[in-house]
Length: 452
Image (cartoon, rainbow, N blue to C red; front, side, top):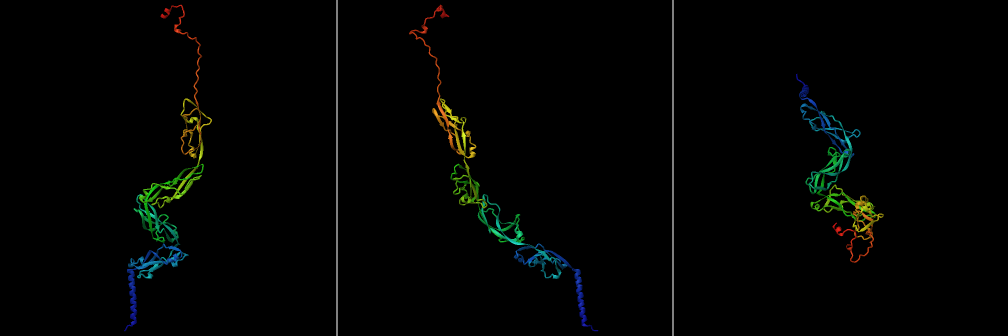
């Protein structure tokens, strides 16, 4: 009996299906399909300018996760690099602050049906996009040569514009460029990267903080010269204060200044004299203070340091004059030139005195004893004399008036001696003398008297 052709075709199809099922059964038994979970996949951002155009910045801190159905023997061949996760900022929902996550399969051997995206949406942190201008400072590194200092320095550009999230900008402390000044002398230039630092002094990662700086580098110019410290001297101030006042002292502050220049120039400078044009004490009744710039008095080839205070303060002290009357007692006056043959009398009712004028502080210390008054009476003739006192007087005092010592000089009168009246006697007779007179008769023998 002859078989029909249709029956053969059906058998063939059935056989093929059975073979496939058998093959699948064998494969699933020997190389089963398993699920591989890949985490920590970065999420790229597309159309980021949408946020920038709206004046905002954003950040996505999340990562994505996918699950892949793979054969056991393909486990190691499927990795995170086979997938790209991304968000499109055109799909950002302001109300929820989220954006959908999409996936691209980069390995064509992986079927879409075998991959499941587990991270469907992510949150987006936004901030207002702002910009600030920050001055570029110069951070000097290293050590200058002994006796040298930086006289001037500048950075080009002097400032930069920084654009980024408002919250990040608020934490910027400064911008700076570092320059190594070791062994540098004279006029030097150098280049360096501009770095941003927060208010704690820590460097800011520009990329991580989504910051854009208008310039990446700055050029620094420096003048490094030798230094020397010299005194400031105030010149002689002309003029006379008003009547009754005195110009007691002057001062200048600071008293020294640090200057810079070539070694040959500094060697000839021992001090700097400061005297502003027109400065005078004429007619002053109170102290005066003026401030000038030391730059106006620096010699050629000399300059101040970059951070030096250029102001110099000059003070002129004006004080009122006071008077003091000092009266001298006779006991306080040293008298010289006494003639013992003369008599001296002094007027105690009108003692010598002196009226001094000067500063109150000086007058408080002057006494009669400190003036050491002395009167010289040498060569005075009898009569009334006015003797000025010789004083040890400090030139800080002015003598307004003085009263001399009044002296009366007289000659000494010798004392008169009393004499007894002479006794009247009879004149002696010529030829007679007391020895020749006859002895008085006594009744005794003269010879016996002699013997006795």
